[in-house]
Image 1: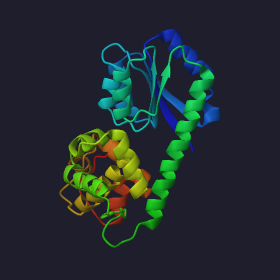
Image 2 (image 1 turned 90 degrees about the vertical axis):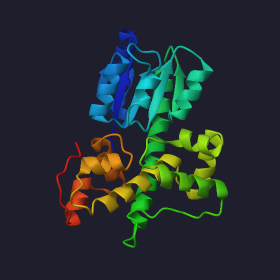
Image 3 (image 1 turned 90 degrees about the horizontal axis):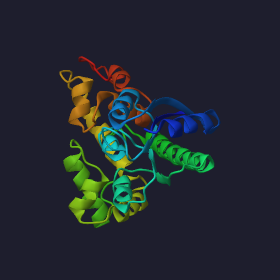
Image 4 (image 1 turned 180 degrees about the vertical axis):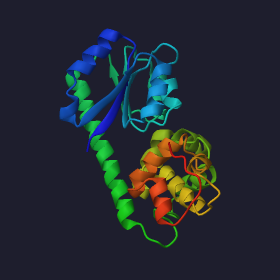
Length: 261
């Protein structure tokens, strides 16, 4: 499996050095684009929807963290010359995998990328398990519910009520008045899925419900289920089901104008 990467760094020397020195192919990665500022990076990420984003925090136009917050990014690595804890805390909220200090050591970056790839592969095995266990009795993706843990059950209830909004672990933790790290750890321990996996699976199940309405196109369904763009919805849908939304709908005999990007 090959994973795609977008790299955002405003210092040209640093950008060119990392592009040239990291052994992308050996790691199983393809560098699909580089950008020099936060706005260019945002446009590139939204257009290419990479598996991994590597970005500096301090960028022209907007910061790396502002950029990540606006984009459908599941896996990111932050590069920075500053050890500001508030930046680190915000990065954790955005689900950033790691936080590397400049000057960047090539071996450290490659090691971090290798660890991130292992994490992505673990998530994909989780997706495969969900697909394997899927049944035709109701949900496309069978999700654990009524776990007997009041915090986890309350989190699932929060997801059920808010999946159509731009919510994540940060909002759920604030609603439950818990730390994000505690909620994340507990949710994974009890359900076997991390918060984002569960949220996206819930959204996919709801999207399948909406696909039975021929009047709704894929773009409308994506937005109604909390996905920021139709293209991102199509990517996540295929990750869970092995098919694009259009393919799935066609096989189910559905119709309607499509627009999954």
